[in-house]
Length: 132
Image (cartoon, rainbow, N blue to C red):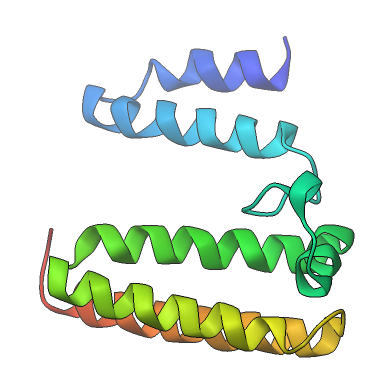
């Protein structure tokens, strides 16, 4: 019996509440496993700027880009419209700052790590306000 088939058959032994959480997690894990390794959050075929090309050419930068993009997407969904506008303005400013790195992968990695830390801190503030 394959590992995937065994994990799915074992899932039915769990209570319904756990099963409903497990199935989407297993599906997400499968999709991530099948996704290309260097897939950025934007279309690399239309990348023109040096910073975009560097992200598309580096698996590590592409992963940072996807992580940053995911955090940004989650954060903008959790805040009110006024805050969303401020976050969008900050993201545009960050993109302009990222472009100054050009093709320098070290600079780009630092820029991504900095932005990810900012987004995680903002999400941490939301999470600290209570159960959702």
